Every structure is written in C-alpha cells, then in structure tokens.
Length: 317
Image (cartoon, rainbow, N blue to C red; front, side, top):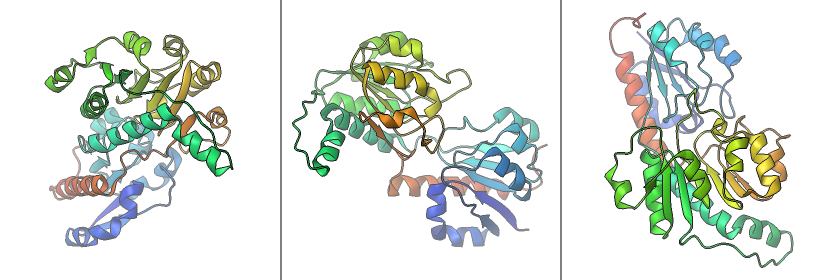
C-alpha cells in the first residue's frame, strides 16, 4: 500500500530530488507545499487529513491540527526543537513524534562564533559604510578575556563554550538540567544562576530549548540585570526573547548590539522596531544550514519516516 507524506521543511524541500529513489522504493508519495518558513495552523488543518506521515519544519502542529490528522502515523521533526508540536495531543492520538537531535552543534556554534566576531569588531557596520562611500575607523572590542555567557549547556552550548575558550574568553553558563558534562569543567566554565550569567556576560549566547515555561526568558527584568554595553546572540528560538523589551534595551544602550537568527514571528515583520537598529545583525533561521548538516538530517529524518511507515497496522489510537 502506498503512503502519502507531507514535507514542510524548506531545507529538505530544496534537496528532495536526491531522495526520489528511496521514496519510490518504499512506495511513498511526497507532497511539497509552497511556503516561506512554515505553514500556519489554518493551512495545516485544511490538508493534514490526507497524510500518513510528515517531515516537519517549524510548523504549528497544535492539537487542532493533530485532531484532523486521521491517518497520521508518524511526525518527524526535521531538527531538534519540538516546541511547536503539541506532544500531549500526539500521545493521546497515537501519533509517533520523533526529532533528529545532536546533529547541528558544530554548525550552530560556528554561526555564534561568527556573530561574536562581527559584533565585537562591528564588521557589519564597516561593510555597510564602505559600500555607501564612507571610510570609517570604528573601534571594536577584543574578545580575549571577555566573559561569554551561555544559556543552555547541551550539545550546542558545549561547542559554543569550546569556541569561546579557544579565543581566550572567560566562560559562565546555566541550564535547567544538572551540568554533568566533564568537557565544560575542563574548559573552566563557571556554572551559575541565570541572574549571575546576565550580570557577568559581555557576550550572551542563547542555546536552550523553548518550553512552555521559558517563553520571554529574557524580558524587561532580565535586560535590566545585564552588564551595560553587552552583546546578545540568539540562534535558538525567537520566543525566548521579548522583542519589545530588547528594543528598549538597545535604545538605552544596555544591549550594544544583537545578532538574531530567530524571531518571535518569522519572517521578521516589516514593522518590527528591531529593524531600526543598525547595531543588529539579522539571520533567517538559518544557523544550522550547511550542505553537510542538511544531508545528515535529511538522511536521518527519512530513515525514521520509512521505518515507522513500514510498521504494520494503523497508529496506536
């Protein structure tokens, strides 16, 4: 029997032709909807009932969506974060949910490192000014002996710490889980509370998951506790930051600059106040996107999908 699969991950959509043989061998018909970043809840509700499997990007698989997914056996999240999936509803309905953890640490840490250097030396401003006909001499800051604060000390946070240590930075970090990684101890990372990290960091990198309890982890209160003139980097999830509070902190100079690959709403709205700050660097939720990483995650996601669809019977519900 043939299976129908919805693929909503842009990175897999762009390379789907490479996997035609695999899908054909396992009698899988693939649907590629038009999208920029993700399908909305309403869009998913309209179509989800047709599919046996999904390889998802950052789409909102809410209870309302999953309850319409009458045939769905398996939902594979391309990447790590499952914050947009109602896991309780999936369990109740017998839909198996998987992700592809531990595959992006090096790539995301490289982007964090790049953002730190850009912010420290204001290379993005230099580029813009020279293109406009200027010849500025902007004084940056050295990274050596600066304090790098890391919120989230999992696989990505650990590699970010390694990058920072290689640059001679002091390391401080926090996590909601116990810190058991011996590598972090060897690097000399100081494990601290969130407030202690905020007060010490010259550069602050967000590398934690988004959960129901940490939305707006950084808000007005947290920005008021930061070292004046610090730099903020977010390659994790946009909703970890209250963007209105960030705009206020940028306006008064508490945050000297921010590098944001993710936003509360994606794509970044045209009316976002953050667009008015030349001290900000923006990405397009793209920190993990290298050819090598995409190939690894594609292969893992498809392997899980094929394995689960091949299991006999309908879903568990």
